[in-house]
Image 1: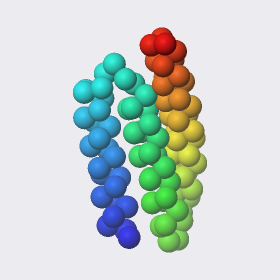
Image 2: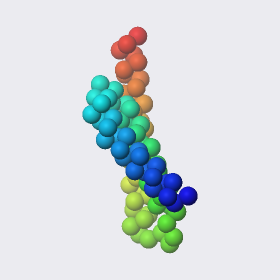
Image 3: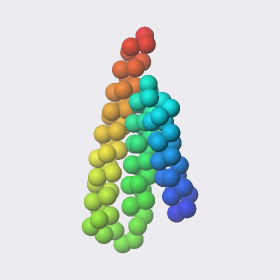
Image 4: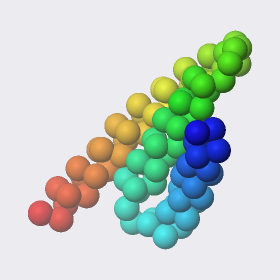
Amino acid sequence: MDFLLIAAIIAAAVFVGIASKKYYDKPYIVNFGIAVMMLLLVVQSMLMQPITTLGYLAIGICSIAFVFQAIIGYRNWKSQTATKA
C-alpha cells in the first residue's frame, strides 16, 4: 500500500511536469493534476504514525492547496468551454 501511494505521488508529479509543457493551452489539466497530487500527499501524511506537528502542518497546507487548485481548475475548464461554444 505504501509503495503504491508513493508511486502514485511520483507519477502525479511527473504528469504535472509533462502536462505543464505539453498542455500549455489547457491549464485546467495542470490544475487538476496538482490537485490530485496534493490529495495524495494529504493521504500519505495521514498514514504517518505518529503524526507530528510537521505532519499536521503538511496536511493543512496540502488540503488548502487541493481546494484552491480544484477551484482554479474548474474555473479554467468552464471558461474554456464557454469560449468554444
